[in-house]
Image (cartoon, rainbow, N blue to C red):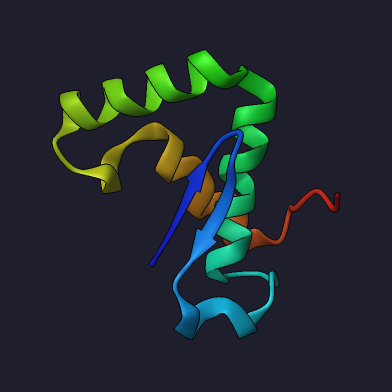
Length: 80
């Protein structure tokens, strides 16, 4: 549905582009990943994400995904 690829940007499937960035949206979730990147830096962000994929085998249980789901649903988004 979407991917955040720092430092390039956030990529969202066409059918989700018009839903905005409000609570519970795909863009809200991806913005949390962008905040993770800003907090961790480029190398650590990619390292941690890949480490989680290898360790867990599924993105759903990765701590970065858990954080993004939780924060994007409760509306605690930073406006850039």
